[in-house]
Image (cartoon, rainbow, N blue to C red; front, side, top):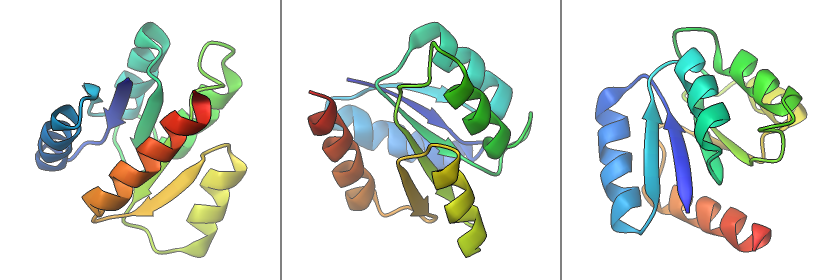
Amino acid sequence: MKVLLADDDRVLTHLLTARLRAKGWQVEVAHDAMQALMTAMRSKPDVIVLDIGMPGGTGFGALTRLKQSARTEAIPVVVMSSSKAPEDEAKVLDLGAVAFLLKPVDPEILDETLLRLVTRSD
């Protein structure tokens, strides 16, 4: 299974990439919102893990565009954010995300979330 990990925090993406690969995932990484969109369109991952606070456009905008495109609309998107504002969680869920994870992301919760999404799509 292929996951697109989109976050501008290079330390976090490195750590999560190592963990996900050890669990058998193919991982692609994007470090800004525009790169995330281009990578998702090109590679059609099974799941996208998207930070909402990135350069190159916001994660909100990237999520909106992902859900508006026929090529990517069916890909489940898990949003990560350090924002504790309830309106941010409500907004991403309204925009089509399937889950909202608060940073720092608990790797076990990320694993469980991704496993649940893969199991649901099989």
